[in-house]
Length: 149
Image (cartoon, rainbow, N blue to C red; front, side):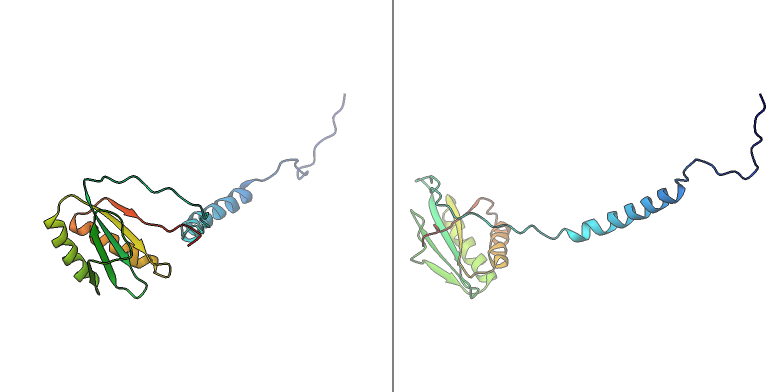
């Protein structure tokens, strides 16, 4: 049987994948560089539910710190969580830290709760928590209001 001779420059039935690999590597580098830049935060819509109050230790004195929208701080020291009355207040964060440090030195068995006003910036509350941490307060509870208020 005679075979037909193959021409020298006959078409090949193979796919050249080298250009596709180059494109894939370029896209991989682009995604690796841009992905960390896109992550800034997650938008959440928290549900409005009525939560039960946490049990508190009746042996400890409670300091309830309120952060107001205008940047002032006031707090109440007592046997229960009280956001209506106030024992003392401060205009600046440094003044608040100094006064609360004195309260902590007088009474070592304190429980700390922070309440942010509805129109208070999140940053103000976080700064207050960080300031309390510099004094040595590591256990802080957050006070929320029920949705019907």
